Image 1 (tube, rainbow, N blue to C red):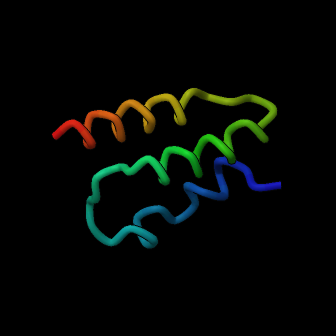
Image 2 (image 1 turned 30 degrees about the vertical axis):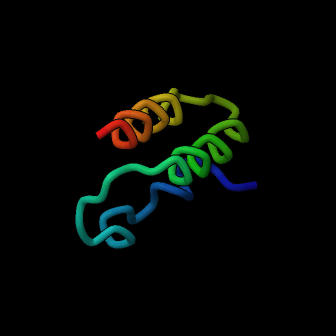
Length: 56
């Protein structure tokens, strides 16, 4: 089972620079979050960011 903490572990190292959130990023976070016993709403925030990024 992939946990949200697995996705976010060492995020700075995995993403050496800022990047715009994509739909694929949001989907990956959602997949991890739904497996969590205590989802925290991060997926919704990423989905909103991806939508805004697509509009710009």
